[in-house]
Each structure stands twice: as structure tokens, then as C-alpha cells.
Image (cartoon, rainbow, N blue to C red; front, top):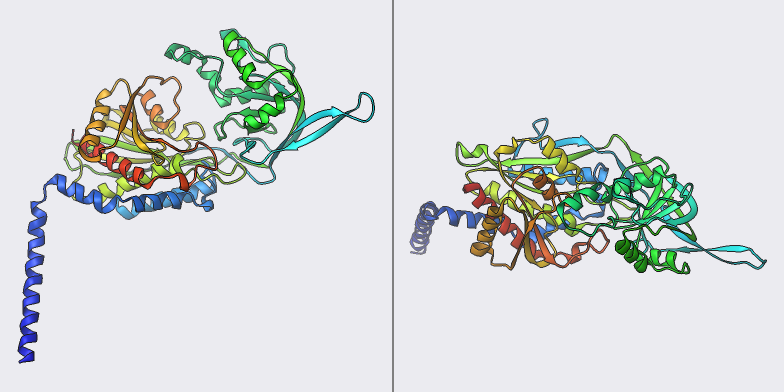
Length: 501
């Protein structure tokens, strides 16, 4: 009797299992395309997984992901590995996932230091004694990302914005000798106008490359740069520089009869230089290695569209992978821009695994060299993998992991892009959305602006409400996993809607 009951129970279970297995395909068939996309999105895009990517790319073993460095090469392998795992189509130069381009770099090692020397009266009449004051890294200084190797000590001369612009009637170096000296300069220019034509006039002089070359050409042997750190600068053999904070700058101004804030205000108001010898010295030591044959690597993979004709048109999803490297210590760059790479990877996996594809193809472009002067995006626009006219939209990701709000800035010539972004948010994400037109294309600050300047229909996606910029505090503790997921889901649906539009 027990045997009959057991066999009957087994038969019932088997019958139920077969019925369930037969029912699943029928249930799957009943799902609409939208439901299948939602299913793919929810199965693959999770805050836990996205935050995991941020942590993986923030690891000290990647040494801050300086474009051209060995640490960056490790990061490239990580992203490339995910492309391969999910079956994205490789569209690089050699049939792989890499678009390579020349990218010399400087790697800064520990042993780099900065200090100022303050004069005080000595025991003897007329004697001058120099007191050395050092500063903690990050609180007072950062190594110059493209500094030459060397050890210099010299008088400091304040040279305002470091601009020589005879065509604009302005020269911070006029009438002042900086040969053999260390100059203190700040970022930007005395121009306050936001009119495009004025921005264009001053554009060349806003560049870090121009400022550092100008100091070098005037005979300076070093530079203190009042600006956030980064490798976006020229390399001049033996010319050393570092970035300094308000703490150092205010100490240099102390005792001069001037204050930093008042001096900058005076330059803005009079539109005249206010350069002067500061009566103090600085000592900069940079332990740097120049790698002239280093290369940058954009990572390129495609999820092919479903329409036999429209699959030859493209939506590009981009975000830069690189950061500052070791200057000379590690900065994670968790939000800038591991958050963007995380979101890009989340959407790449969801689209690759979804049974429903957009009609147009989607190119996932992980960009190198953004921090070094937008070099990777500039190279791509000059060497496009697909003809520009075949690209219907570019969505660039920049710092999407800290804060609570989602943001898009878009090329003012293409307001329809923002309309699609808003529609995707209204239907699926339901976050507070900030939108603004980008008209200042004469001064690109993101890879998205490079695409805009090159004529692509493009918008940047961001998050707002928190975060740190080019500082050790930009670490994984500042990342909001929920906003990562919201950005990824928003991007997923925006790309789908643009791909089907």
C-alpha cells in the first residue's frame, strides 16, 4: 500500500512539474515587449551590483587610473572582460574592444613634497633666517599631474592668472622678472562674461597647457597652481609644479600688505594685472617619471539593434574611466568617474541579456583621457568608429553616483533629447529631474561637451546634491547606491526610447 501511495505521489509531482514547465513558455509568450524589458532591467540592474563595480574600480591596485599608466591598463582589462562576458560585439581597431591612441603620461611617486620658506630677522643686523613650513598632502598641496622630475627652491612671484594676451591688452608677466623663480598663478582668466564670443576670445588662455607653457617660456623654474589637481597639462623637462590650496596661498600672502581675496577682486574689477614678488620662497620636489610612449585606450563594444535597417544607426553611451593617478598618493575617483562606468556596465549587461533589443544599435564607449584634457573623446570624434551621420544620439555619463537628483544638460540645438529623457523619467523612474541647455561649447569641460562641439546630438547625465571633486574624499563612502540604480534605469529607458524613436 505504501509503495502505491509513493508511486502515486511521484506521478502527481511529475505531472505538476511538466505542466509548470509547459506553462512557463506560454506565460513568457504573453509578456509584452515592455514587460520583457522591465524584466531584463530588474534582473540585471541592482544597486548592489552597481556599487560593486564602483568598489572594484576604486581599488588601490588600479593606482587611480591615470591615462597611459599600468594602473589604467588594469582598469581597461576589467571593463573589457565584462564586455566579453556579456557578448558585446567588439568594434575596436584590430577587431577587439580597444581603440588605441598616443598618450604620454607622467607617473608621480612618493618622495614628492612642497613647502614654503618664510623670512624672519636673524640674530645679526640685516640677517635673514628662513623658516620652513610644510603642509600635509591634500590639505595644502597635490603633485602636478604632468610635472617634470626635479627639486627646486626659489623666490615666489604672484602672477595672477598667468595670462599673456597682447591681443586682449592683458599680460600678467609685463614688467616683472620671473626668471629662475617659482610663480604662483590661478585657474581661469580675468574674464567674467558668459557671452559665447567673450568665452571664445579668452578660451586659449584658460587652458592649463597655456598657463604652464607661458610660465616656462618666461623663464620660471617652477609653479604653484591654485587649482584642483589633474594631469591636464603640458610636460616640460625639468619644470616642476604642484597644485596648492587656499591654506598655502593665504600663507604666501600673509605679511605682504595684501590679501589673496582682495587682490583677485582688484584684477577682476580693473581688468589689470596685480603681479608682485611675494618676499617668500618655495621648495618643490617632484619624484616623477615621464612615459613618452604610453597610450590611451577607449573601450568599444556594441549591442546590435533588432531592425535590419535601423541597426546601422547608433546610440552612443559614453563615460570616462580614467582619473588622476597617484599624485603622489591614491585618490579613488569613486564618483568621478567610477560611478559612470558602473552605470554604463549595468546598462550594457541589461541590454545584452534582454531578449528585446532597441531597433538601433547601441555603442558602449568607455573613454580614456578625460582628466588629461578630454583626449579620448577628442580622439574618437576625429576617428569615429561609425560615421557621425549614423549616430542619432550620445548620452555621456559624468559623476552620477553622489546625491539625490538626476540631471541632464543638453546641446541647445537638440531639445528633443531632453524631452525623451524627461519622458523616460516620468514613466519609469519618478525622480526629481533638473534640465538645462548647454550653450557654452567654446569651453568644453566634459566628454559630452566634446561631442556637442563636434556636432553630435548629445546630452550629459549627472547626479546632484553631494560629492567631492578631485579630492581623496571622493571615495566609495560618498556613493549613493540608490541614485546609481536610478541613473542606470533612467539611462536604460532613455536609450531604448531613442533607439526605437
